Length: 394
Image 1: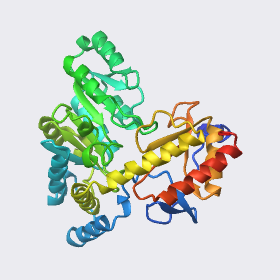
Image 2: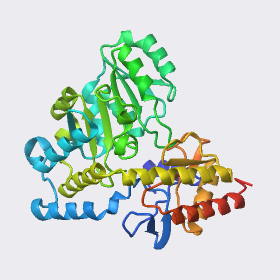
Image 3: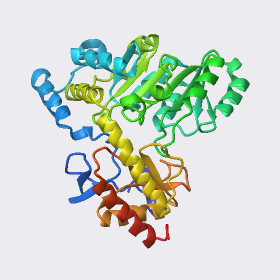
Image 4: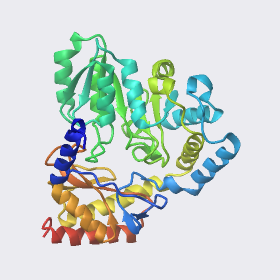
């Protein structure tokens, strides 16, 4: 080992000793309620495939048909030769679905945040960010060079306090929050955050990655959930979760969308969403607009599994969504719990620092509309066995 890289080996060894080393498992099947993981069939309780669309036949056929007609890749950035009529169709459809005027697509939700935040604020400006916001928001804030001021998680009163103390010192201000928080499954009090942001003339942005297809009427998201249409300036969405594909979208104020077409760096300097992805996203919109059946099933499954876990004695935190954190606190225990579940036929990964704060390790269960009641009962039985075996529940 070269001395200049010896520090990496030391850091990796420390991760392993502390139970924080990520051992990445390999899938060899389509996404669904059951997966083939490292060569074994397991019940899937950790994918973001909320509605079961990742392998939906209509999405698969839409992607195949688009490849036959358009080929595979866009071969250019959107501003040169990468914008197809499929991209325009998706953006128009997505705007209508979200009940806004305009939308713009990016290659991922992460890219959407990296492109949006630095385009709207800079070194003379300030960002007020929920302390538990996603890493992509944090990175977008850092890239902007704006002053970053955190406010207490989900606390509009603390947001008002820091805005009152700091807003007048900066040219522009932006308030950013996740809609659904991906580690804890709680939701932002967006109605109150809107009122506070409005009173201080601050741009309001919400990252609805885990709310798209989950919250609101028929999965229209956190803004629809609170009936704040036309009041939230920027809604960032991710198409890799409930939509079952990949990509990102920014919807909201048409001025913002127009500006991102001119200054959103991933839009300008990275190739467009691929042809099969954009076609599959349009098909996902078709499914969502035709019926609320999948969204309704998702919530039915969520309520059942969460109530049963709590009855067993597990701590599921503050979750009010299909994200169910099973709080175990210590990372080595969480990793051991995950391994024991795997041996009993359940694929549910442990999450520890830096994904979550130190001392708050957990198994994060992700419920899907693709699960049957029998699937959920099998998962509950495995959690009960492992929980008692490791002394987590009595």
